[in-house]
Structure formats: structure tokens, C-alpha cells
View (tube, rainbow, N blue to C red):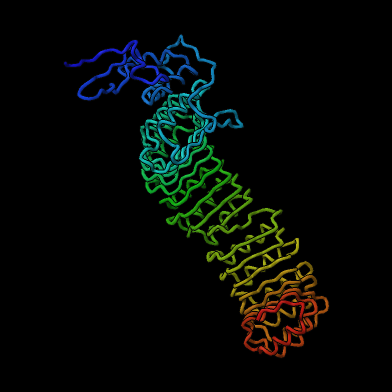
Length: 558
């Protein structure tokens, strides 16, 4: 006897558990020793065109969210219905959505919904659910996606769902989204005309085409960040400059296809730019000249890793007189920064308040309120630059010029003469070309305020400097003359200065200081808390032991 297919009606309980209800029209095919249920429920037999016509007639809100929970197919269909495709007579439901969970929801302080999908959570299905679930409330206002190069990560399909369901999107951030390309970004551009901020980081599949779509459809764009996007080049930036007239902030980093043509076109067109960051780009002096000429609105400028920019580029940028509003300038790892270029920038940028020089070490600008100056290990920083800084910053009290081999007495003297407030801490470690002349001036001008003086490695400093210190320094408590050309005579002079109240004295590497200095060191030891005698080869171990016994309150390094 052969069996065909038949409908199960009143005998459902014989074949199925009581807790489950079977559809009346569910079909079973029997053959051999068993039977199999058809893979698709009858409702899934409907073609997508029919489902689309049904879904677009549903009210926004609970009804659509409920349908989205049925299957991934329904969810993706619902997420791809554009606002213009909804039936006009259908009104939105006021019910709360059912698709997205509370853990993903965050109401921003400025009033719009925000989502951040990180790692494995960043999938097309999740984006579609968010788009459908928030659509009744205008959709997301801010979306951040932090991908991890997963094969199930976000693709153009997920971004399309966001574009259709979140027309009010204002902020979009895409990091490490390797499967998102121009099609997805173009959908965002077409569906999210209110976009204000776009952040693209490590998006190799996005090219100029996607950026051009943003430029042509998102006139409200005010902030753009592009980092490590290997296929974005000049054409995309040109389009942004032409069309996004409200652009205020731009950052471009490590994009090998971006050259002078793209940067110059962007900067010469976007005339309200206030913050510009250009790092690790193949641009030349030409781009810096454009910045200097067209950057009338720029207040913050960051330039880093521009290996093809020379001294001429920075010099032209300064003398162009276009950076009148520039308040903060940071330049790191750029070979073109020299005394000449810094001087031009200082003269041309009259409102400069903060400046960072090569290798990221801060240098002050024209600012009477500046109290601390630190310029460390900058080989291109010489006497001319230091003299200029001294004239522009009269309020400095703390100075650290460690490792500036190029500065001389003539460069440091103008700085000392300009510091009206009185220097308190001065560190000149490894400034090899300084002589006693500058120390004589330092103690004469600032002996009444000086508390710390570090001359470590200044090998041209002799006993004459110690005489000046003994005569003029009233408050000095920390003195480092390691590896200087001082002798026992200098130590004797220090010990005779009754006004001195030294607490820390370092003589490390002073080969001319010998056992003869023992009584002088004992006299100084009445106030000393720390004494460094390391590498003083002319002082014997026996002398050190005697000093340790007599100066029991002092920590002695030997």
C-alpha cells in the first residue's frame, strides 16, 4: 500500500507533543520507515514581492517589530523598506519596539539614540534589528561600529539597513570594517542627509566613490576623520571641499593615495575649517603653503610624520600671514622644523598660545602667563629659536633644556634676561656648549629665586661657576654639577657660603674632586640630605666610609 501526503486534523495529538500546536495545513511526506516535514512553513512560500507589499502597509513600531522577530528573512525585508516606500495612509504606532534590547540602548545627552557595536556584536543582523526597532522614533542619531575582520561582520547590507531606518543619523564611526565598501557608504549618503560627523578608520574597501557620495548628499558634514584607508585619495577630498561648505574639523592620517592635490583642494575650498590634523601623508611644501594662505579660520593645527616637507614649507606657512587665528600648533617628526621656520611661524601666527616642536616636546608661544618651558632632546632646536622663545615668554620660571647640544651662551642669555618673574628651576643637562659666562649671568639675574640648578654633563663649567653660585644664590637647595670641570677649590668655595642651604649635591663623574674635599663636604653635610659621589675616581673608598659615618643623616651614593 503506497502512502501519499495527507493533512493532519483532529489527530494532531497522536504525533506531536501537547505543548506544541501544529498548523492545520502542515504537510508531511511519508516514505520508507519515516516521514519528513517540508523545510519551509507555508507562510515562507510567499515571494518577497508579496511580503514587501504586506510589510510596507504595516504601521511603524510594534507591528513591524513583531514581524521582524519571525525570521531573519522577514527582518532583512523590513529593514530594507525605504521611508518613501511606506503607504502614506499608514500611521506610526506609539508602542515600544520589541527588536532591540535595553543593553544596546543609550540616550545621548543631546537627545538622540546611540549604539556602539563592538567585535562579534557587529553584524548585519544586529544592525537590521536596530534599524527596524528604532525606526518609529526616528532611528539612531549616532552609530559606532568597531569590527574585528570576522567573516560574519558588518557588510554593505547592514549599512543599507541603517540608511533606510535611520534617516536622522548624525554621527557615524566605522573602525576595522573590512567588508564595508562604497555601496554601503553610498546608501548612508542617500538615506542620511543630516550626517554631521564621519569617522573612517581601517576601511580598505571604501574608496573615493563612497566619499564622493557623502560629499554630494550630506551638506551638513562638519567633521571628517580618515585614517589608514588605503583606497581613499585626492578625488574624495576634493569632493568634500567642494560640497561640504560647513566642514570645521578634518583629520587625515596614513592614507598613501592622498597627495598635495587633495589636501590643497580641500583646504582652499573649506574656508571655515578650524581644526586640521595631517599625519603620515605624502604631501610636500606646497600643502603647507596652502595652509598658510587659506587657513584664516584655523585655530588648531597638528602636523606629524610629514617626511617630504622641508624648512621652506614651514617658513612659507608662517610668512603667508593667513594663520592669524591659530592658537595651538603641534609638529612632530617633521625634519623641516628649524630655527628659521620656527621664527617665521612665531612672527606670522600672532595669536599662538601653545606650540609643540619635533618629537612632541612642548615649547611655549607668545604668552605672558606661561610658567614652564620644556624642550628636551630636539637636535634642530638652536640658539636662534631659544632667543625668540625668551622674548615671547617673559613669565617663565621653570626651564628644562636637556640635550640641546646646539645652544650656546649667546642663545641662552636672551632667555635669562627676558624672564622677569625670576627663574626657580633650571635644567641644562647635556648642554655641551655652555660655559661659565651663562652661569654667571644666571646667578646674577636669578640668584634670589633659584632653587634647583642641574648642569649635569656641561663639561665647560668650572670652579668659576661655583664661585658665582656661592656669592649670589640665596635659596638654592638642589645642585647637580656631575661631569663638570670642577675641582676641590670649587667645593671649598661652596662650603664657605654661609647663606647656602644645600640639601642635594651631585658630584658624579667629577674626576678632579679628591680626598682633599672631605672637610668641605663635611661642612656642607650639615644640611645635606643627599650626596652623589659616584664615579669620583679621585675620592678613595676610605674617605667615603668616613663621610658615611660623619654624615649619618645624608644618603651617600658612591
